[in-house]
Image (tube, rainbow, N blue to C red; front, side):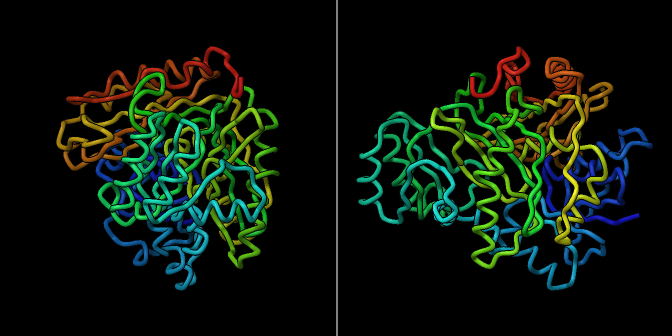
Length: 421
């Protein structure tokens, strides 16, 4: 059996590990205490029961395939170090990871590729940044250039708030070095769509469409987060995925090749469906979180073989997805996303019911909260309505003091509302 090392410690990595464990022996480095606890609760015959964690660094692990989950290690060059050891790696090198590591670099790449995106400017100094900001109509969008764990974006109708955010980021007060350059964009309106493609350097194959929920509260209220839930498939996406592949993903992959970058891994296009057509909000270099938690359970066939083929530069078959729907509800700690509280005891994991998969993220030893997004509760169903009902029924059993969740994940889609309508 193929041995796979999944690098990371979040719910995305847990979902990857469970999907890969259908056909491979999987170890997660470093993983988290919740993965181990949930493996013990799983049916011994299920892939989830075969996932184990190790504190060893990836470079010390013997595996046939390395799948790097988070963006941080990719930007830091982990894929390069593993490839220097002649390891087979799914994940771009540090050169390709700049697509996510620097929003300013990514925007320049999109312009080079001819990909539609928001009007924007990149700034390291306050005066020109504020001058550009004043030329834009609301809403104002201010982004850190560097990595900020999904929290470096402000969208506001207040010019004063946007200006204060620019000052806080450029001074280093908000996000340290990651914010000392900012990208300021025009605000786009429309439905969002996540289109994730698996790339082998020259070819790319799309996964099923998904949609996530970034704001902390119901009705898209509150601050931006790393993601409070997701669903797949997306009603009405239809040919939109093919259109995004042709107009955004493949041109970007070609632009990377022109720069001498052999990009093997995930290209994740965050798309806004505007009245002028799809526009790229951002590109990420890894599976989305929580999008992975709804896509991987629907992915049919051998996920290990597919990722190994991409890592080896020989991607051929298009991924196939179940006709079932998947809904993921993220359970977050008290105080998330501003100041999540750690140490609250988690109960009810053994009561979530059949057809519900729980993926662990911010879980510490002794089953206590140890991060902002603590658990992802995912369920499959014959349609979004059934999957949504199962996910929320499962989530209702899991408790800790101050637990947060949105109650409207996939609500519109489950009622038949199509994307872009």
